[in-house]
Image (tube, rainbow, N blue to C red; front, side, top):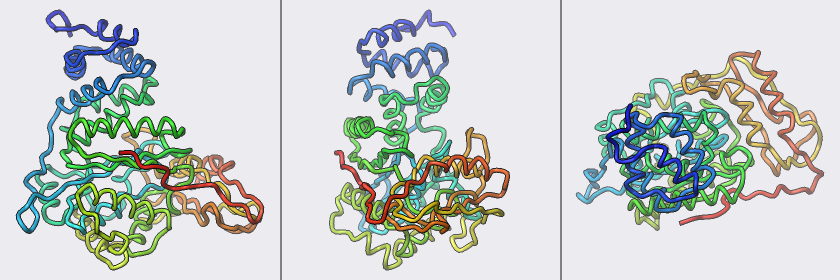
Length: 437
């Protein structure tokens, strides 16, 4: 399309960022709108993305870029949600930057809803080695991810929590920009990552947002300094948009819990909701619940108690049933399994999250392209976590798939996943690294 009647031109915008200049609010608004309309070509936006990757953006530029992406679509409004006393119900969401075995959203949303807070959890699908919340929940017979805006509002009013797919109307500019970044080596640009995440979360209309920014081998951000920069950038974007935003930096060198897959992560989430489950999953679920409740002005709640006494499980059952699922139905089970055994006696010091995530992906739990199907029962079940003493020949992991020809490449991914040290060794790990507000 011609740029003859446009107030700016793409080359002018690219040159400003190439030369480390600052874009004006009007230039940013035009850029996002013009790209969405097709006035700016993909190759021109690719050049601009690379200039942003190399030269960055200041806080005002990122904030305006995010606002322009929000303006490209609709905004949801939860102000009509009412408490039993007639007051407005607070809304709080959580976003994770993704990891291996990260099933926290599943127990967290119903847990927070127990305390009268509405949790509109608009989630996505997995790509590559990181799992997707919707893929996990779709392992439950009958459960559906696609809800209308009215269905979302009704469910939040009725039982307080919803986990569903984000509608195509939220920040449509982001979908087009993300696809371009994915094929041009510019996914890692922090201004573009932050605006991509926050444009959708702000457009979602939540009052408060708690970010789980993961760092480590299985995370998108491997380096703590860059993860911290991303967290600080997103907190600033939320603050600038009037959304009460806090972030936790959390460790993703080791998978969360003892499962990485879809159905097996649902199974583990239900164990947490029943008052059990792995310590790290429980710890992070409770800590994020405390942060979300504090954002809603509730500081005297006992989320750990709500896991123990069955209230969170009751909320989970209602949430799943509201979306057509049967929370009591049997989950899919992989047809084939193969065991990986401990190679030596000693203390398990490392269990590399990326290796486990890639293995689960290769077994069929993940996808290489958005259109790929996933196997509900595929994944990796871990029998020990760092700190545990293991003996040679004991089961360390069980690989699960419907297609046994996948075992070979999955085992290749796990060749260097495990480090075993002498008795008395202790792994150096902390789950929650820092809080950023």
